[in-house]
Each structure stands twice: as C-alpha cells, then as structure tokens.
Length: 464
Ligand SMILES: Cc1cc2nc3c(=O)[nH]c(=O)nc-3n(C[C@H](O)[C@H](O)[C@H](O)COP(=O)(O)O)c2cc1C
Image (cartoon, rainbow, N blue to C red):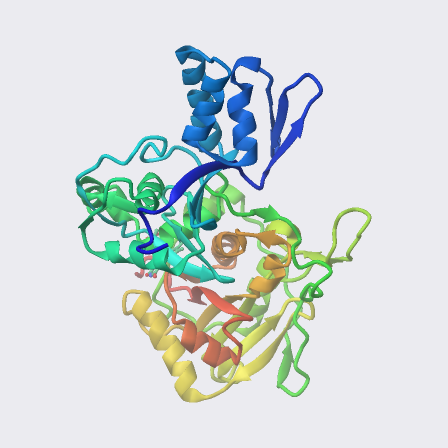
C-alpha cells in the first residue's frame, strides 16, 4: 500500500468471537457469546454465505442480486448486516495488495456508515480521547468513549492516522479514515467542540480509559474473573511474609469496640484534621487496626469448590476475599513507639518498622498536612498500598478499579471504627506515590500506593 489509505478495499468477515455453523436446512447458525441467531431466510442467505468467505459489501450484494433478490430483500440484508456489525458479530477488514492492513472491531453504535462511501468534506482530527499503542507488533487505535477497536497491521496506516493530530481533510474513498471516523477515533470539528464543553469536557483521557476498560458494555476486552495467571504464576500470599531482620512490635490485645449503634456512628462521624488533642496511645492504634483490618480467619484454597487461592476474612468486605491492601502507619508518637514508618501485619497484629529516617517521617507528615487543609502535622499517617497482583491473578480488566473500591470500603471502616473509639479521622484524596514507596521500601510495581488517611487524638468536644 502506498499512502496507507485510498488503495484499500473493505471487506466484511465474521469476528473471532462469532461461531458459524452451516446447518442441514441450508441455513447458518451463528453464536456470539451467549447470543444465538439462525440465518435461514433462503432469500438472503447468499449474502451471508458471501460474508462467511469474507467479501466486500459489493460482492455480498452481487451474490444476492445473482439469486434474483428484490430490493426489499436487499434492504433486509443490509439492515441485518448493520445490526451484526454493531453487535460485534462481524468486523470490517481493510486489505491492500492481498494483505490485511487494518481490522475494525465494533462495540456498539458506529459514528458513521461504513457501507457507503465517505462523503464528508469536513476537516477531521484525532479525538482527544483517542490512543494509539503498539501491542505485539499490532497497532491499536481506540477512543474509549466509543469502545471500538481499530487494529492496524501496516505502519503506513499508523502514519496516516497520526497525521490527523491536526485538522485535515480526508480523501473520498479513504477507507482507513472512514473506519476511524465510524469508530470515533477521528472526529469532525463539531465532535471536537463537543469534547471541549461539559459534560464531555469533565472527562480526562486517562479516566475515560480506566472507566471504559473496567466495565462491561462498549468494551471488547476480556473482563472479570478469568484467572488468567492460574497455572502460570502462584497467587501472591494472603499476608506478606514478615521481614525478620526488621524491628517488630506486638500490639497490645485490643479491647472490645465500644458498643455504639451503627446509626450513632454514621450520624456522628466527621472528618477531623486537627490532631493536637490528646496523644494517641499504642492501645488506640491496636484497637483501631484490630477492629478495622486484622485477619479474622484464614480460608485455605479449595480447587474443587472454585476457590483457587488462599483467602481470608477481615472486618471490611473485599472482592474475591483477596485483601490486597497493605496498611502502613507513619507514627510520630515519642515515648509511645519509635518514630518511623511501620507496616501492619494483620495476621500477627503486629507492627514492623520499615523506615525511621526523620526526613522521611517529616515529609510524610507534611504531605498529609498539606492535603488536610494545612492543619498541624498529624500524629499518624496511614498509607494504603495495593498488591495489585493478588487481584490481577484472578481478574481481567478490573483490578485497579476494584482496588480503588476497596480503598473506599476501608476508609469508611476506618471512619466508623475511629468514631466508636473517639479518634479523629480524615480520608485524603491524593498522596505522593514516590514518597510512600520510598518510605515503605516497596517496589511501585508490586505495591502501588492507593490511599492516604490520618488518625489522631480527638480534640475536646466544641473545639474545631
Ligand atoms: C475519598 C476521600 C477523600 C478525601 N480527601 C480529603 C483531602 O484530601 N483533604 C481533606 O481535608 N479532606 C478529605 N476528605 C474528607 C472530606 O473532605 C469530608 O469527608 C467531607 O468534607 C465531608 O465531611 P465529613 O467527613 O466531616 O462528613 C476526603 C474524604 C474521602 C472519603
């Protein structure tokens, strides 16, 4: 192919997720995930048989005309074809010189008709949401708001698409750009304007990608509990192994949680950022962690029952009972415990020292204080990291989204337990990942920092 576009021919083929069987009564039976369709209308079967071989739209129509189909039958066929394309049953393939150069896989309604020649004389440009990435030698272009995937096998096509980073007119018959327009990867000026005003403007590109990839619908990627790493790597342990070379402190036995009603805890819970009230005791820390996050019970793997990894039970709920969140506490409580960054071992109900460098502790406190409206340095900063591999071993597409949900679940558990224990609590929105990994001596790929929280002694009633 010379310039990546106008010399291509577009053909329609059944997609890889569509199973086609030829049935005895001269029909075709299609199945696509849980859906099934029987194509046995003899009058339009010739068109579908052509698609089975992979054909251009003209060839499919010729096949129908060859069997004497009427205009009504042809229109029924085209409607069916459009539905099949939108439903992801068939995909559109671009070929040049006998080679496949691009394939469009659809995830729902298309933005333009790919059965007709492209007629727009408007200038087109890449949507600000579009991404183009290389994956095993194949380029993938997509706009997450639409969900369609344009796979590109020819580097010249990548160049053509990339040239739409600034507005350009597309040539009539430019099949690649026709598909990119249909998939929302390139947009006209009106489309680009719509992306600059609310509600679309509220969406940032990375957030649109995470949102689309972690939900069903408008999503062609594998999603959910597929256990794709099972048999390839062992699942990560329920609880990290303690590091016996580090200082360790067993927390005192927790006292029962004061009996306040759920309604009382919910109604009186507040975010409190000023922790200059009484100093936290080791008993406070023990009670807080025990009632929110300890391991209550280990649940061994049970392959027969479908639990392919060891799990556990803790006070807060967790997808797959995976409990991938790790809890670190930066404690500045002289006379109570050595000042430093501690890991909470939820199985042993103990703390393990990760760093006692004064400058790290100070930075952790200052970052938290800045987040908490510049209040005095907190006594205890909690950092949550995610051993994302615990989730990714089981889940496709949703691990990061699920871990963020767990952060929310744990925040509320902290708030409610903190309220019952009369502690000051405040969730924080954005911590410093590089600092947390340095402070906890963890690898960012193994443990991604995902949540930040502060606790302290509560100010007397009536104070701020
Ligand atoms: C996920 C989350 C993030 C938060 N981030 C911050 C923050 O960065 N700084 C802060 O001062 N408060 C933060 N808060 C506390 C909220 O500001 C507080 O919950 C809200 O103002 C309602 O007040 P209340 O908790 O006293 O009912 C956060 C709370 C949550 C749940």
